[in-house]
Length: 309
Length: 310
Image (cartoon, rainbow over all chains, first blue to last red; front, side, top):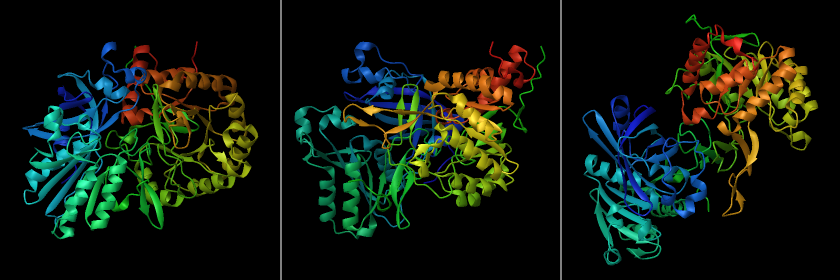
């Protein structure tokens, strides 16, 4: 999967759809140079969105817990990875999933089709698919879903020879940023142990047990690996989610001798290596060193990362 | 009204194509912004801080957004002098702009050592002295808040920097910035850059802890601009004007209008910092905007704006 040149581009909002209490899907269309740049987007790459020009929703529509933070004057862009890329002639439509958590994302809810937003991207290094692999295990925790959903689709399209198995977990049913789950009744959720999306069967786990396996998604991963007869060097794990989940996933990968790529997250300002804020502690010569999530990542080999306990 | 506008400026003996710099810690070591702009079109470029030895930098979180601003505590993460000379000088040589290297350290000897090495590099026009660092030998007091230390460090580095321009970057976290500015000028500074970030803090009220791992950080961005404009004007009036020392003014500049405010306040050149994070390449727009302003106002030479506050 090759990278394309990054730049500062304008995209046109094609849709902004609420899919859960706090979850939205936002589509952006790019033309010309921007289209060329984003047509080459590798799953796991990201972009920095300037949403400072978006307005706040009407007062009554701001959730109580965001009333204070919503009033803040935004300065920085917000980084997002992508859950889908569709190429349509010389136009490209990309899609992100977002969760309303603060001053930036509450403004994003007011974006409407036709609005123009400034985007810096595509940025960073995405997931890579080594030649020797015949099985890909996709491990998602909550808002870690977007780049892994994109990867699932690309694996199906470009690497049909690879068997792909998905695992997705969150705290409870309402915390999955997926329409396939958000649209279901409580009873349907209770009996749901897996579902199909992007050509992959996803096993479900939730901390509260109101959907799928009650427990961590990594328990399902370990169970699968434990009962698998395949050569371990033909398997690769791809994961994105909360830090604790990534740490567990990396530990499981190490125990089973399986390669694992993790998409990391860190507070960042620029996304292009200027501000040096998004440091990720990695193993280095005789100690540890900081690498930059934006430039050296966000996807790392899990063996390189020093996970905090 | 003539359309011809001269936006070149003279800055401490350097002839700059225009007054716009990108400033330390916001534009990398050289060509990091080249996907977004022609770095050579800048009036000047200041590298991120270089110390004698490589520095890993602080733990994370290293930044947090605040109202119209941000705090950073990167901890001078840098590749160190040796690697900088090995890997970056070649890049800087190709930049068709005046390059300043921001030099930081924990002791005067370290500043002198780094400056001596850089003084022989043709690619470099000047040294920017980052004195907002703790002096490890004197119990961690910041060099930049003690006029006697500023005088001492500036004179020591001046002797080491050969024919390079010595620019001292002033911290605004002092009672009277004119006192520290005067100390730098007495120590032999050829130029002053101001302001560095304001020491500040942001607290997570859910955890009751500081957001930054370092607890404190430097506030930058539009939030500090009016204070920075005031401080530039103060240093211009009380120190720089009479001493004939140019000021590189900075603090929250993201548009040509912001830049022009600083020039009217007394800055001979202006620095774009945090705005590079949000709109990489905005410096080019600022250069164009300054040109447009001069044309509209009938200002033949951009340097005629400097210190014209009515």
